[in-house]
Structure formats: C-alpha cells, structure tokens
Amino acid sequence: MSMSKITGMMSKTMGMMSMSKTTGMMSMSKTTGMMSMSKTTGDMSVSKATEEMSMSKTAEEMSMSKTTGEMSVSKATEEMSMSKTAEEMSMSKTTEEMSMSS
Image (cartoon, rainbow, N blue to C red; front, side):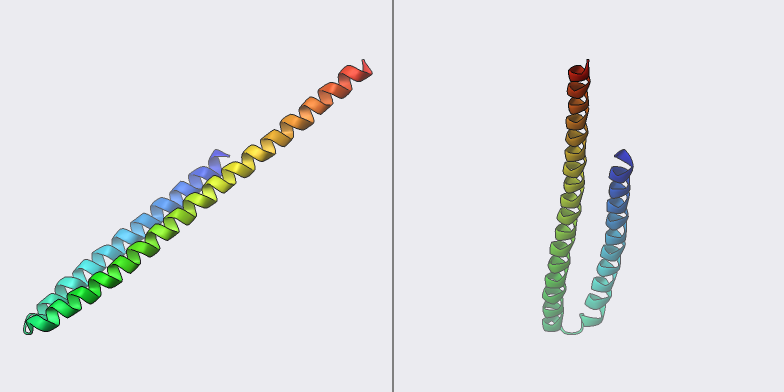
C-alpha cells in the first residue's frame, strides 16, 4: 500500500526536477534570444511574446500531467479501499458460517 504511494511521490518529484531543469534551459535561451535580438527592438518584443506563449503552453501541459498523476494515485487508493472492503466482507461471512456450524 505505502510502497506504491511512495513510488508515485518519487516519480512526481522526479518530474518536478526535470521540469525545473527545462525551465532553467528555457530562461537561458530567452536571455540569449534577447541578446541577439537587441539590435532590433521590434523583433525582440515579437520573440518575447512567442516565448511566453510557448512557456504558458508548457505550464498547462505540466499542470495537466500533475493532475493525471494525482488522479491515478486517488484511483489506486480507491481500488485498495475496495479490496479492503471485500476482505472485510469475506471475513464477516466466515464468522457467520462459523456461528451457524456451532
């Protein structure tokens, strides 16, 4: 039970790590872009807007994957609680059979 939950959290943390790495690369390329575009002010504002758009798209995709991860975790928890109830049901059934036979 806790093992699968920990694994989920670990993969979630790994995802955040790789995301922050990507963000670092993005911010670097943004600075490089501004430096090379500083000749033309018009081009600079256009490229900046384009980069911001692509960043917000990535942010949306990141939040989607995060939600999916949380959903799969809660689904696993639901399945576990269901199997637990099934076990409890079978236990009470056995108790009833025992009391009948006695």
